[in-house]
Amino acid sequence: MSEEKKERQSKYQTFLIFGAPGSGKGTQGRILGQVPRFYHCACGDVFRSLDTRTEIGQEFVQYSSRGELVPDDVTVKLWRAAVEAKVTSNAFKPDIDFLVLDGIPRNVEQARLIDEHCEVVQIFHLSCPDRSELMRRIRKRSIKENRLDDATDDVIQNRIHQYEQETKKLLDHYSAEILTNINAQQSPIKVLQDIIYTVTSLRVWQKTSDEVY
Image (tube, rainbow, N blue to C red; front, top):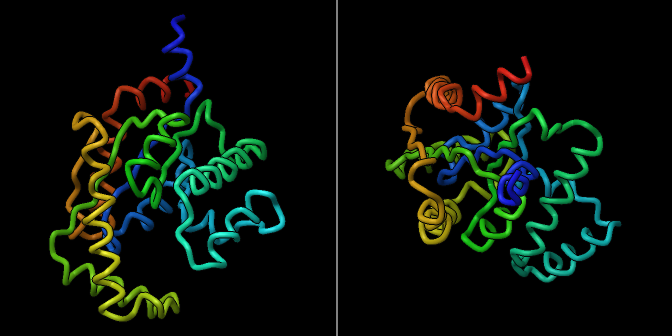
């Protein structure tokens, strides 16, 4: 077996879900995470569940307590520690499970760092060109989840602008061959249907499905 093939096999087989705030990537990630053979990891959940008593937790606090952006290498280090903990506890079994990520990577530098640990097999870009629809969804979510920081138009517009300026560049980082654009203005069940259809048509899914079952 070649060294390149060994390296690929040691990486997590990964699906990425990209989309602007309000596009529904968190919803789709959580649903997939309930299906056997998928493990969902959301970057926001990693930060919210962070144990600040650990060394990496203290490193995170050094930046967040000063209101500074957490450097990309620290963010990825936090993400990797969280995923490895799930491997240790057998919640995530990388030999048979696919990793589903949303909220990370957020920029090209994070993508390069994550590429060292993940073999990205497919990217789902939840596209919602109607920005007024995105704002409506975020307002609704802010009320439902009591996330009042999301409620003002200025905050919402700034988050969407940040996505357009930085995160969308990620789509150019990856090969167009593994990119699937999905209409996020459909109902959530239709979006899920499109994702599942694509996943089950992939050779890597069919191969591992046969091996497991």
